[in-house]
Image (cartoon, rainbow over all chains, first blue to last red; front, side, top):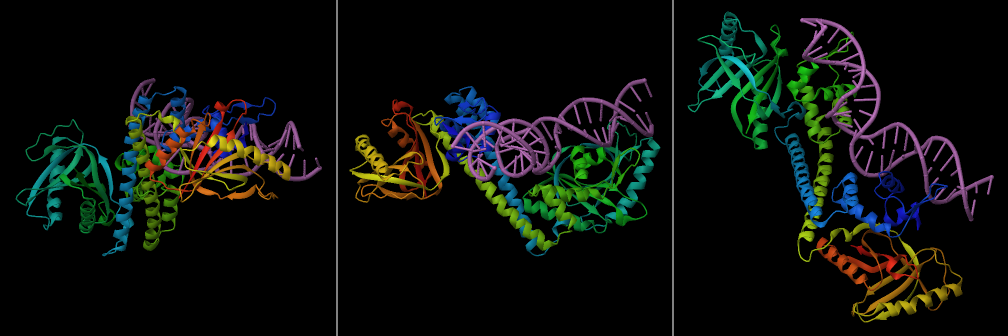
Length: 273
Length: 273
DNA sequence: TTGCTCCTCACGTCACGTGAGGTGGC
DNA sequence: TTGCTCCTCACGTCACGTGAGGTGGC
């Protein structure tokens, strides 16, 4: 029989660990002095402890190990649990690997040319919800076109027509771009309306934007002339991450004080495949 | 300005998370109603939040992120921190990968032939401490030899001589094996003595066994005839793990009740390179 | 009056590390 | 009497999740 200190030293675990395993019922000492509370461990408990350490090393939690030992687990069950663990470990290993790749990519971006102040480029991948928007559109001949005058025409028309139909906006304003096969672009001005709203109009149509599990998003702060910079950053991010865009690209005008366009806050959204 | 619920929905984080970031001072809301305590967030805070999410995704802790943001970190510093993070992420990714390999290896062992009840084979890698032992040795012609009679001669001689010298054992008994270049084996019987003890004897010598950072160990329970099985398991483990043994192999007799050898507990130790 | 949104505690998570304060036997 | 080993609380870790119990404005 060994004292807890001796036993800990032999097994190379901490005394605290042995006490903890006692507390959770995983490895009660062979004997406890009723008077002093001193714990004593039998030499044979070293293999019990080693079993625990091996299972822990394989990634099982103490609760799982307790179950396995209490149940006197059979060989086949153990294999089953190990397969689960393997799947989990595979996932974790891949996750870590991908995170590592992201960190490395950041370093490349920051140290490479052209040097960028990276924290501005806070591209975030997140899900986006489905929204119902009332829209009017117009065609433009490419991304070099001037969109400002187009939107300048579209939004007043949209809001006027919605007012005429008695439909109230129920959320932010959207700008949508759809690239056609012939290179032309549908420029679409929209605004969120209630999902069950009906618009009785010949010029305004209702469009449902589907939810997406993953969209690359970037918040642009400032006027609409400088938004090309933000698009450039987002484009470069998409390319570097090896992602593919599907569907419309979206601009969500989260805050657009009419008197000062430099204070506008716009979220750019690219739905990812 | 958005309510906390709206802002959470836009950013796709939980309300609780926003409150937590407020609590730790990472992202206080743009305004708090003095009356109700209601938090309000400005649209522009979405990019602040996104910065936090990006840094978190790269593996920084909230405490680190708080520091980075408070300090208004420069580009070069950020690169420095990212390099540290990269090293850390590399380590973690490798660790996970190795753990995965160990799990997979276990599955192979358990499902392959010959099938083994794996939990018996609790090979544990741990450091071992330096010990000072008093020893006597004899030569044997190979691992097929009968060691029992050799040890049967050695231990009584060892303890008798130690008694004559007035040196008391200070720890467990050891059995050591040293394979020579010519294939012969030094069979050594030893017992731990105090590190500063001096033994004035022509037959017993003092030997210092160095500490090792990593040793593969296996606890054998039972008599010395069945110990070959344990050695076989340990050998197979070493081979499968691609490890190399250096120096003596050791048997530590942790518990050896003289009346019943089947209750003996012995730890086998192979120092790893 | 009933929903709705929001609020503040405060416990739980996982496997121990790390004091604080105290005790029995050499 | 002084070390030594051991004991039992109990807080802290990390980033929130999850109730419990309550409140102000439509």
